[in-house]
Image (cartoon, rainbow, N blue to C red; front, side, top):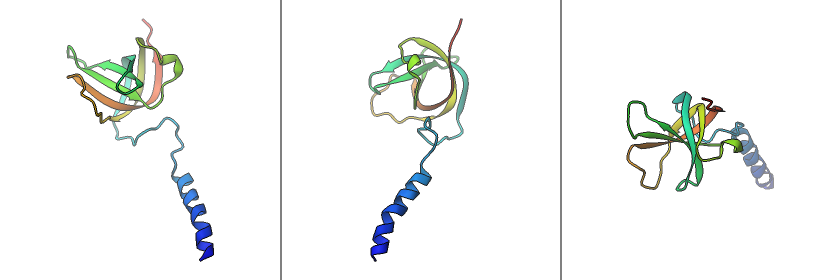
Length: 117
């Protein structure tokens, strides 16, 4: 019985280490939705307390896609920075009232660069 009690924490630790995701930029299970070379603007979102990428919805006047990256490099963490980005995304469930026309998503960035005119 002592052997079982001794090995149980060791086995639990081994299972945890083996099941851990090795990708530091992955914060959700990919659902097959991707976005490529999309233009957006970075702003700090006060309710989420995080930087988000706002992208317009084509053929609309006021609709926005709001992407919340799992990680975003420091040099992009400035309000109004225009970027081009790519990545995988999934719906983000939010607990606050959103502005009509906004859709929120979590984003695993795969590519990010400054937009040059």
